[in-house]
Image 1: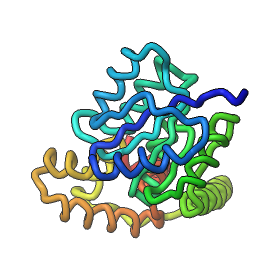
Image 2: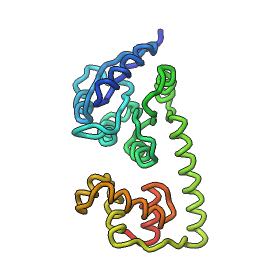
Image 3: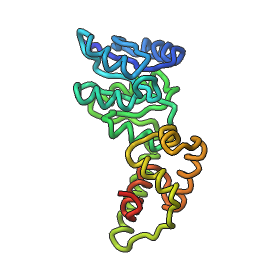
Length: 223
């Protein structure tokens, strides 16, 4: 007899949650045991269940507690639960934040029932399912990291000096703040923060926040 797979959903948008429930209903041996609208609700809700879910589909952008922090808290207490991020965010920053929090996979919304089923099986068998686009982004990131490490091992790569404001923005990003939090702290608009980040990327010759912070530290621009 094939065992039942207990699955929970954390998604703040009711329409998307309903579509996901309908898709999961088409997957054999999957039983929905929890359906939550905020990160805090899923963290607290699964602890009240008689049986923990085997796997959680986790949105990232949710109220009260975002999906990345909810994942970190759940994984700290229940490392055996598999968590797959299911999100619209296609950028490396969200991908690697999710991975660092303990997520077991990263899928983009719009996955078919067949793709969801494959992802569930892969995660439960110890794999790390990624949407094709995110898998490619991961490969490109690793390739650029290897090339950067090779360069730093031979000759320090020169970087264009950052302005005082650009340095402040990079320092804020280095401690994990989001753009809107940086904007609030520095009394700027979020659009202005994004423009400063673009300038930082250009001057440091990188294409994501993780590499910018690493390059900034290597160059002594930030602690």
